[in-house]
Image 1 (cartoon, rainbow, N blue to C red):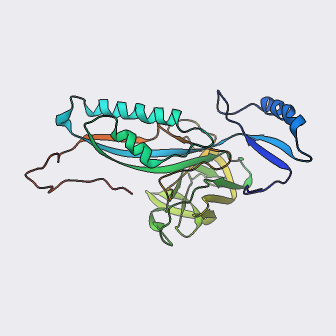
Image 2 (tube, rainbow, N blue to C red):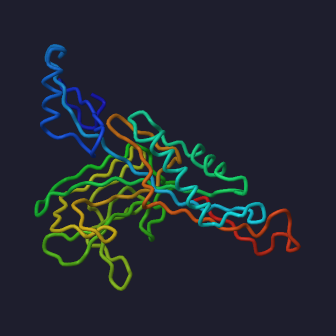
Image 3 (cartoon, rainbow, N blue to C red):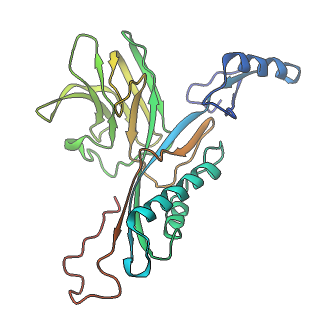
Length: 284
């Protein structure tokens, strides 16, 4: 009953498949049948697929090249392995919270030569549109989103981005962003400049993390990272660096689409330049 759209008399049960991404409909029906002897009064179980919220990392790691014989590529490989193990062993469960300080800590601990890491995150979900049909879509991040003030980053697209698609009646590739005021906008690029086709295509609730797209008529879906896709990806900046799975959600790090840069630090143990010209990485 605390779902965004409550259905009374139904108990949703999220089940993560041991292999593969989701259970087959036959397996779901079999589970429901096996649970029937335990049903309470008019309450019926419904097996649902888990929703995945992907965490995208951008990490800049600095190390002391004088204290190790390892190259930056070797350190990057070791960091990637460590993050992958954290993702597999700690996340990808219904009750597993992505805790940012834990992640940055294990990166620092990969090697004694590592001096620091500045790691930022975005989170991503996708949805499968019904083609050639004017449809409403709800995307639930269920984590608050970054919006420090009204109109935040309006001219640059707010904190929402999407992969491309085309709408019925137009051959222009379209994308989605937000205006920092709670509106989702649809636009296309003209000579690299955003030109808005619809500035009220939907809404974005920065407190709950719910995005609603109204009457979106998708004709086709663009390839994603060079591969044919049946989904549209929605990427946002969360308000917190910790990401919590709610109800049937699972949080996982998208290793393949995260970015890890490892560079030798030029300012170790003091410098005759006293830090002049030293470049730091933004934490935002």
